[in-house]
Image (cartoon, rainbow, N blue to C red):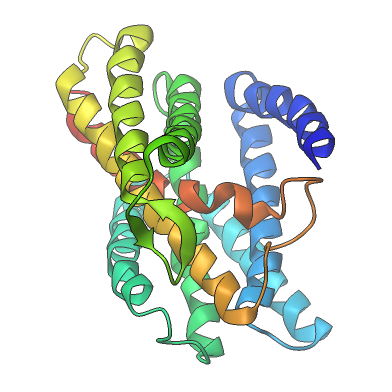
Length: 268
């Protein structure tokens, strides 16, 4: 398993860095759309949708939505409202996480919630990528999420005593959360200097990094909750040693709306 994880990482990390930093916007949009559609396909299992015809129809409907979103990205005035709606959903998801038995059989509701989880994140990433210094900001966001996850893992292993959400994700601890958020603050401070944005409010970026790291935990926990409700260990097996697409992007789904909206406030 460790060998598979390392080999997959050696392939995926350079590919992700190239797509983010050097691919033209249409290539970035298509690449991220394919990732989102992979997550949509896995969501059909989390929502317990039955039958291949229904699952394929569900996937095609979302493909159409992403195509419509691509046509409208040139006139993005509508996008902030969508991101606010998505961020509001992720904050409300906390209530579901705190009551893990709620909604266990509500397949229709779970199927609809994908509308608030996946397309807004795709829109946010593409808006961010198209902005001034956009590729660097997308890379900053990805590094922030990776560092938050790693900081939480190592702090939890070293100091973890108090469980965060034992009925949803037994391995996570409050000490891990603290370690992840401290790591986010460090990334925010160092990243502010690295990006060299003249109008950047650097303390504001640190606060945004911490807030983004905090909301990313909600995305991780919510996908864990959906997996637990349908008896799945991983959302899929697309990435050897790493589980499914949603296993890899769950934190990013929740973090993207918060980061894109907040960045407008700290760039001046």
